[in-house]
Length: 195
Image (cartoon, rainbow, N blue to C red; front, side, top):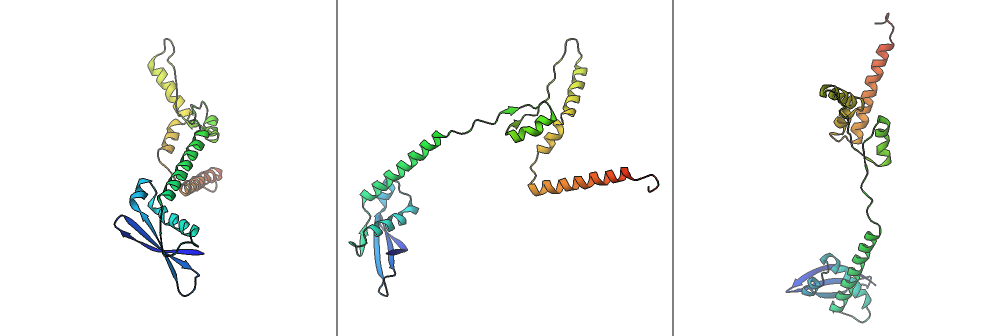
C-alpha cells in the first residue's frame, strides 16, 4: 500500500494531514492524520519531518485504521529520543576523529623550499631576517637586508598572492607570458642581417 500526501490544514493547535491511498481503484480511500502542534513543539520535532512521520504511522496502522488517525505523543517521544541518540552518536564520532593540527608555518630559506612548501601542506611565512653585526652601520645592514629580500623574491610573491586569480585567468596569463618570452627569444636569435 502506497500513500500520497495531498496536503494539510491547520485547525486551532492541530495540523491535519490528508493522505490518499494510491492504487486502491476508482473509489479513492482518503486517510487523515492529526498531529497536535503543541506536542510537536514540546518534543522539538522539525516541521518538515512531520509529514514523513505521519506517513510511517499510517503505513504501520493500515489494516486496523480507517478514516482519521491521531499521531500519539508516545510516537513523538520515541522519535525525539532516536533523534537525540543520533545527535550524540555524531558528536562522539566527531570527538573520536579530532581536527588536524594547524598547518605548520615555515619560513623558507631558499626558493626551492618555497616551491615545495605548498606540496607539503605548509603555510608559507615570507620573512627575510638579518642581524646587525658588531660595529656594522645600519646602512650596510639595510643594504644587505634589501638584497636578501630581492634574492628571495618576497616582494614578487606578495604581489602574486595579493589577489585571487581564477584557474582560467591563471592559464591565460601563463600563455600570454609564454608568448612574450618566446617573442623575446626569437628577437634575440635573429641575425643582424634580418634586422
